[in-house]
Image (cartoon, rainbow, N blue to C red; front, side):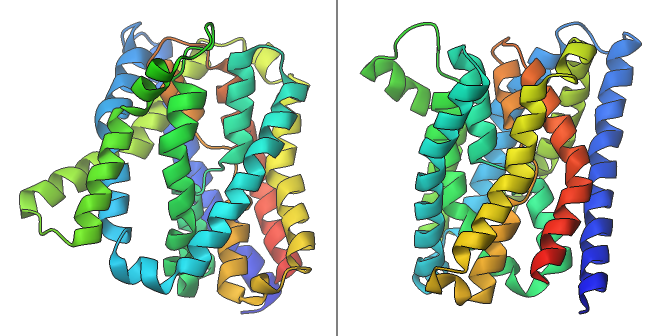
Length: 319
């Protein structure tokens, strides 16, 4: 595939995903604006996401991908992904302290800088642009999913930032529906436990609801924020640029010095996971606990719009 054709393929794929995202965001915004949805809609939708749809998505992901064969044949990919994420965490924590003063907002920025939207957006772009490495990409994201549901969601998005967490409260935050879903999925996938057809259908159906409901929730959330303040906040644009431009370009430069990234599939998988816009868990999870999601909504919307430009450019640079 020629470079120009490759760039166009990524552009069209990204544009399609953005269109889906913003159509559902607009639907949520309009329904809330017209009063069709009740005032507590955001909290109700967020509870559904956190207790049913997200756990189902996590469970299904691990049932399908967490197998002996895949782990045995892809240990290098898993190890590289894990090391990269462990490096990203302290860097993101440091940057978040420069962007915000209060602990909760710092956590939002930390999560956004650590974890891009490598699921919904990433899967779509990779399947269109690099279908031959889709398997490797799924393997590469497994450590990222694991860290998200062991540390990212329970510690950054669900923990009480007003008080110093105790060991008991920290353990309690781990015992959430998403982690339980992940553990169940790991056991079923690793041991190849056969599941009834209806069980698989329920998991698949609930998983399919995750992204649409999350987008509608985003639209409802946007209605309740100060649009002018949020969309003129330089910190949101700074975080978006770091996520979409600085991190991918830094990876491209550093990868040329590390022999392991001469493996094209590994390099492309890593770049795809790093170049995606900011994720939406920073909206979904805090909403369920009645917390302010204005910064998260701003980051999600702005970064997805900017990704229309940045993703084609990043991939055109590496062919």
